[in-house]
Length: 90
Image (cartoon, rainbow, N blue to C red; front, top):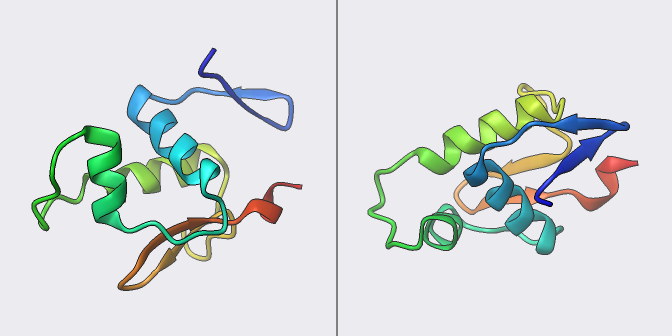
């Protein structure tokens, strides 16, 4: 159904946001590089300049109620990528 709920409320996500969250969730606890996420979501090679993944991560954090200043659900690992923290959802 491609639906996300958090605290019994539906979270409205774009197709790309959903795909990004699904990719992060399917590999929760693992750091995924911007390059991997970009090529996996958009099905094309990452050019090294595009910041689309960063913007989508920011949007996901906002929609999932994650603190942008100190995120606990989707963390940035500087120089490496992003990781979804699996135990941050309880």
